Image (cartoon, rainbow, N blue to C red; front, side):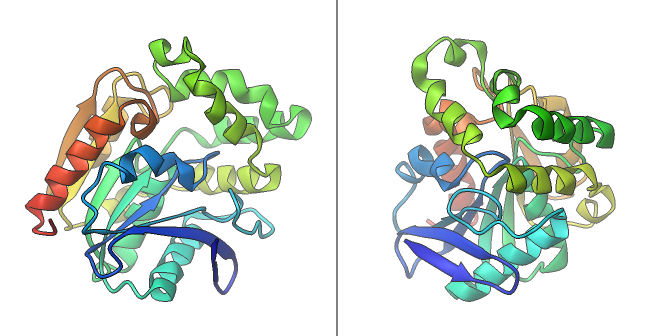
Length: 262
């Protein structure tokens, strides 16, 4: 197990592929850990340096006292790049991971050569919605929201199978304090102004049945970026890397090939 001791957090991270290859960094969504990317990593070219991590308050990373901000989470990611010796990378972020990616690309454009913004937006939901979610968790725990979250995460056909159960367990085992602190980060973030300034080549990905960041919301954010294009993965929801890993990995591979990294 690898742990990066940063200034304000200790992050659990993992590296696959070639240690000498072009770096691709993966940042996961609220209520998941780095296993979110297992099926995608296995399908990507292994000449790449594939790094993923548990953001603070999730998985095996530490859980500093909240609330967090997207700036806090972006600073963690930047420190992880330094810790791992990554001078430049393609940054793949899903949901809150995509918000981290937008912020990091604006703050340190020399470190982010390209972006993949998956199932994310410059602003995700209204502040009151997140405050209501926080109150519900404080009253009944994360498990009290599991059914509603699963309905937003996955397409109906996937929910009819047992394949969603491990992801429900992952959600419910997320440290409550870390989940709530991260909800505050999303609630207080509006990235429109900085995302408009991004110049990196960008791939946007949405899931047709995404109830957390519907395709139109993702596309509106991708439209803010000059050098960006947008794709929808059919028959998937908020976590297409889980429901359609082959299609997801194919899009990533094509994009990375265009950048000359494969």
